[in-house]
Structure formats: structure tokens, C-alpha cells
Image (cartoon, rainbow, N blue to C red):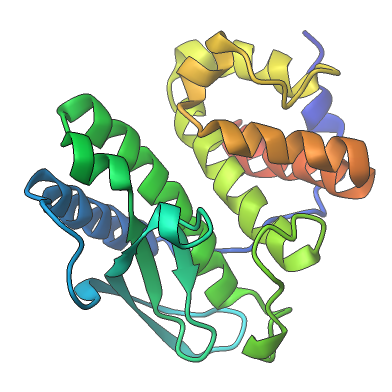
Amino acid sequence: MTNWYKNTTYSSWNLKTPENIYPQIDNIVNNIVDFYRTLKEVPSTPLKIGTVSFLDEYSGNNIFSDIYINNKMVEDDGGTFAKRDRDNGNIYFNIFKEAILNGVNEQYLNTLRNFLRGNLIHELSHSIDPKIVDLDKTYNLYDYLKPTEFDAYSKEITDFIKKAYQDKNNREILKDWIASSDFGIYSEEINNILNMPSPLFQIINIWKNNNLKFYRKLRQRIANEVFYENSF
């Protein structure tokens, strides 16, 4: 296969998140998963799970985001799983009704863990995004074709690919997938490798069909941050 990504102009880097964010994210995710293990009902008030703190390299400010289990269900809040308070940067995770009605097992919790991590990365990306000078200008949820949502979703997508690429057995498959005209199409093989929620595949294809600039920029970011950074 031609190493197409090595010939790319490396100018479309994604939002940069400090490395110390990721151990904090994993700790928060572990705490939420532990909470789900004993979940019987929706809490009466939001339950604080922990705090993520880091230096924002764009603004030079110290950022603090408290993370909460919300006192709402996903299904009762318009299908929203995670939301960020625009005034203070705190992040709230709604609860899946299925977990209360049917209980949880380890397979369910592993899927939840993956979903939680991606959503937390997404919401924290909004916290550092220099385009959001005024928090009130944050775009509405599901506004996939706006620059702030593109940066947050592309950070989430790139992170799933980067994690999968760490396994050398996946590398050629992932390179072929990214280079192909069907990049973004959901397939069992790619899904098993990435363990990426299916809505993210749908978002890639929304960009492909509605905003080729975003679609091409995503591919370039993956080249930069997954293939190029791991080629040395």
C-alpha cells in the first residue's frame, strides 16, 4: 500500500489536550462504571464523581471541570448522554434507563466505559477550544456542521483510531480503511478493531455527504496524529 499519509501537508492538527488529562479521564470513567455496578435508581440530585483539572495551552488558564452523574435519564433528556454547562464548564452524564430496568453485566459495562471515555474527551475539547471565546456561543447539540462540533467530534474519533493503532496488528487494516473511498463506512471488522460507537461512523458520513472540507480535514488529522506521530 502507498504511504499516502506521509505525503500530506501537516497543517491540520487537532485541538491539543494536555497529556495529564488522560489519566484523569480514565479515573473518572472507572468511578462512573463502579457507580453503575450498584445502580438501582436515578439519584435525587446530581452526584459529583470527580474533577478534571489542567492548564489550557491556548488561553494559559487553569481549567477545572467537575464531573457529575446527573439526576436525569438519557431517554428523558432528548437522548442526551453527556452535556457541558456553558457557564462553568462542569460536565453531566445522564443515566441509561436500560441499566436501571435490566441491570448491568461486565459486557454492558465495557461498552459503557468506551462510550464514557469518548464523550468525556468530546466535552473537554469544548473546554479548551479557542474558538469558544464566549461560552454562550457554543453551538447547539448535534450541530455537526459547525466548527466547534467538528473539532470535538474529530478529537473523539481520532482518539479511538489512535488507541486501536497502538496494536501493530491493526495498522495496515486501519491505513487501508482511512485511504479507501469507503472511509467512515461501518463494518464489523473496523468496528471490532476500533470499538467506536456507531453514531461516530454516521457523523463521518454526514461530513462526507455535506461538508467535504470537514471530511478531508478529519482524514488529514488522522494522518497527522495517528500515522505520522507513530512513524518515528
